[in-house]
Image 1 (cartoon, rainbow, N blue to C red):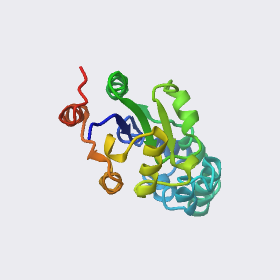
Image 2 (image 1 turned 60 degrees about the horizontal axis):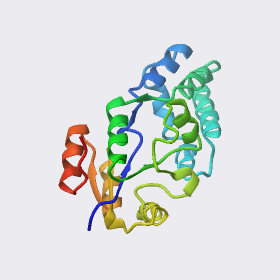
Image 3 (image 1 turned 180 degrees about the vertical axis):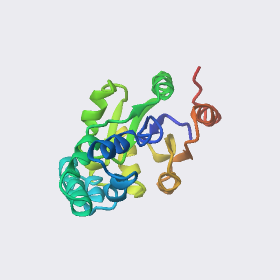
Image 4 (image 1 turned 90 degrees about the vertical axis):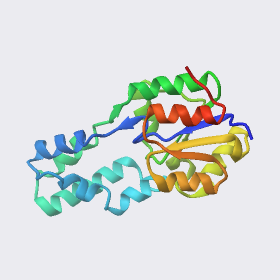
Length: 203
């Protein structure tokens, strides 16, 4: 079946965090290295943000409370700085998205908080995709096969007409279980080759 749509993950593919926000927050609050990440992704609110049950602001407040509980008053400054950072774009991948869009439908499929639209605007990516699928808005998160099937349905395509790439193997496995072509993202050049093998050729 011909691939007609290419779906990209956001973080680890198009955007990277590089620990910049965490390090800046720790320095601002006088926290030891690793203090923010130790709590940011372990507080229950994080998982809930991914399906829209909790806002990014509520997650940030939970991280601030956890930091204060462990490190004392003033530690909440670290969370404030951390959550102001919106990551770094890979400009080569942004150009690839535009090139793929010349020959196929292009979509973003991201496990994200309710801040995704804000971050896309910050990075001047509004309108860069034919469709944006945010887990927080859909109420489903990768690697649940249901989110990939939802995306294919909205795009008006069979799963076998879609290709998905993500830096996390479990998310790629989820897409494959849903019937999509899918590959782990390892870099732009490799992705171009894999797309070409499926008939999606870009310059």
